[in-house]
Image (cartoon, rainbow, N blue to C red; front, side, top):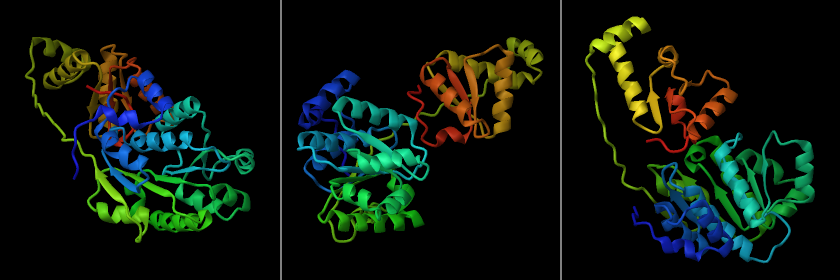
Length: 337
């Protein structure tokens, strides 16, 4: 396992438009995955980058690829294929891709089973520089004569969430699709994989590169620091009054009061409970306390409601979310202190 400190000079190796945009976004120092992955990706190596969610691993591989793309002579056809297991692309990733597309003057389009016919036709006549797609859709578009012609220009293939795909039928489908793509292109393209922590890094790397190609495994795993603080507040006189108001026991009132104090003394707080029923019940107790800055988030809510709650939490309209395991699924909710 490699573990190096962040090296600010790594960004200096990227094309100037990318450096300027990074400065505008306020990123002066690369994260550990960026320090470790940008040089080998720039030098054209096949790479499997293993790093935790939220550590900047997507940019660690996209920025050097974009850097190479904008410095090369522009040719028609698709240069980058970005494969993701998720049909409903993470909104945060789409927003970031749109930013770079606009800033660098490159076209990025999404293609999956639900893509409208109109958009498919447009992609067949004027292909984007980068196509974001799923393993199934890549298999489906490879036989089409026009798309095959556009895909023959591919130089870079990035596979996101490799750990999700590698051990399933979709993984087998993808390895076949990558070999078929290699036949269409007629030469090697750079293969890059992104993965959360896996126990079998070698196997996952082979999955991306195939058995006969070299691939570098980069494990950028910053040491995790956890602090646990266990509290069990005893009821005070205030809590006996509060218990009457909330229709609960003084012990429960003491805990609710302490949770409210923790929310007030921090910028943004996640309150995990172990069921939707408890989430709703606790949410109702805070509603009784006229707290409009604490919302409930669980899988039974509509997608629109969940998105609104996540956005309000990110923009600090909400100070806390009472949540179940739904919020552990890598949803982007900004910084939580």
